[in-house]
Length: 175
Image (cartoon, rainbow, N blue to C red; front, top):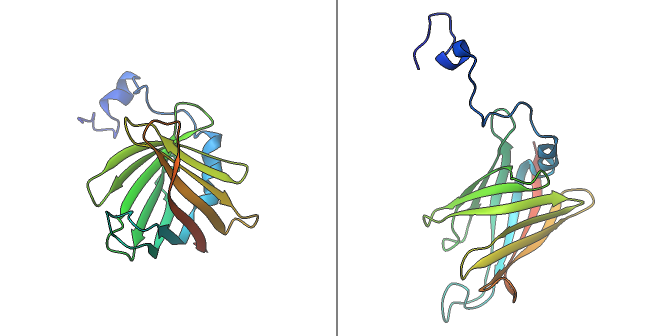
């Protein structure tokens, strides 16, 4: 953008500010501090998860959560040792409801999804409603905050839910 030579931008000179710039950091974002750090992950898929006849798979991986500059967005990166498990990057920020967050999920398969999310009273929840493929995750944080034990569920219609896979986290290092 052009500058007047004094370091200001045109919008600063005119007094105009975009309407999507928050005045303050929402206090609710502080709840996400419970996730910040490096985690070892444990995942368990039942036989047939990766296609008919595929064996049960237990694996491990790593996940990190770190604040992006300004602490308005939390960046989650996930890797797995099992080659068939996708690697992912997620960006978490405030949702439209002041008590929820949004997680924008992208993975190595080219999948892009948006989940709603909550984290309160020691329970982490993610969910989405998509035609033919609803998903939800519930993870419970240990009292010391160093373990999250959880599982994903799936549903074709949002009313009848089936276990999808187990996914738990063990804190390796806090940030």
